[in-house]
Image (cartoon, rainbow, N blue to C red):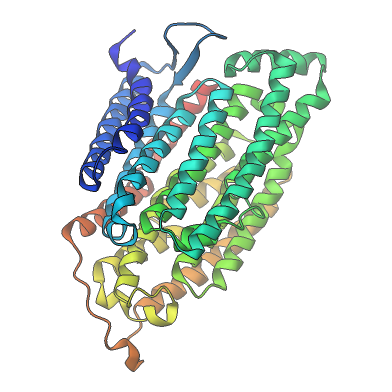
Length: 499
């Protein structure tokens, strides 16, 4: 075994151990250590990605070299390594973009606790990406949930505590369904390793054995993870969680946490159940309907908001709907479009939250549109960055959002299951709604001030690090938009390795 093949295990262990180590550090040391860990894990992920891309093959890693059921397995392919690299980049930029507000909004004695949660969250995301064991995935789903809850409520006020409570209630429902589904799968197959379960499920599908329990397990797992990733109408916790937590928490939660649950769902489709069995179960038709509903209703709710952070949060509901709609198409092209949209949404939404912070800082800390008037002039860098993020969400060419919607449209046209027309109609309606509320916001921040009460809002001078973060976020988004063919080829190669 080449040394580079140990990197997934090292990454999970390093981030998990850093959560413990950070607990005894002061806030400065915790911040520096977290930055160092993210860079190191990002570099290891990049090296692993290049190695796997050159070999063209995935591999499994037995921890302790003990086979199942005594040992645990990690599996790495180009899709997993690339996703781990992307998550590290987005997390690092989100933290650095909101660094000022982390120091201002969190009690000094609890800042190192914030970085404990970040490190545990990173370890859980990496484990969900790499694990080849279904029960291990469940354990890290719970670590992910607890860490995310900590990121919400660490800025202690009434709004965040209420939002964290709602989040835990909905997450407990999703976790319960997920655990029941895993328990049924283990009962009828006798395995927890993903590849072993897939072999047993394939045999059961051929013999029609345990058909009802198998359908029940698939339904519980899919619905449980849909609940945890805030698919409409299970999104009620989301606006307050994103709207009132620190800006770094909002950016990480919207960009990464829900995507970790969605990624493990994709692995279950391909590596646990088998995509043919998933199609025959008809569960994708249910996800398709809820995805279409989320695309429309998330945008409708966003249009009604008068708070910029809550507007961006409701937009996430619509974007999660896009991803599940792609799943519901039931084709490889639909899955590829959904995975690309995971990347597109993560890069766009983190950019929007971080740039919106600069606009609110230039408006007396107010998040209301009435006070944001002219904020694009008072903070030019944040205004330009927000405009570019909005262009991506609407689907303007050169940005990642355009490629996402193009891929969804192509997948819909290629669909032979009668889903083309509703998909194209909802894509068109959702895009128009996106344009209405995002362009309304852009017009607002570039409208000259007319109220005397806004004359006292100062012109904000950003730190150089904040401007660099905004620039890198824009570059990341435009890379996905301009180099989309490379990204799509990478996704296709990763899915081939899944099969």
